[in-house]
Image 1 (cartoon, rainbow, N blue to C red):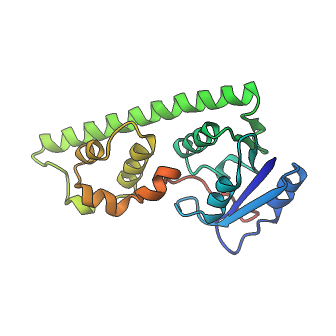
Image 2 (tube, rainbow, N blue to C red):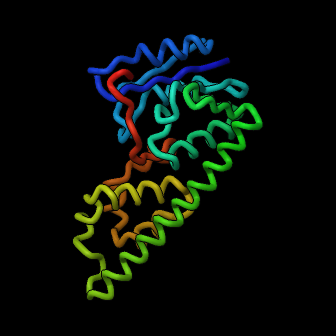
Length: 203
């Protein structure tokens, strides 16, 4: 069974374009959300994932409708694969139920791991430079997580599941309480929350 998922960013946009494309792709059930790419809570997506069964395929109009970043997209597709659910993106013509589609996502996964390694390396270099200037964290711990770039790094590291929360906190120089205040971990365990691109007003 093909299950469609559509997302628009604001109520001023229309989901009709995506719904028409999903219907043309023979999706028998379509779920949708009105949420920005940075929003963790997506009830429509959660309903689609709960509805899907082994052998089904989750279909989206474009990759960024599911993934807010490459890391988030890879994590989401891996979760689907673990449940025996396929994934298809109409615009990019990617279908993980085919050998070619699976190969593409293996390449994406390698790129995501490389990106995470670079993030860790840059963060460590930045902290080392700050310590060399006589600072231990650069700024107050809570304020550190208010930096959008630093917050994104925290969420990407958490989503990657390569490090424990304690290790991430030590790397970023923040306390666990500060980390949990800024990273929505219960949602992140299901669908890691990192910022990605939104589509235009057409959907």
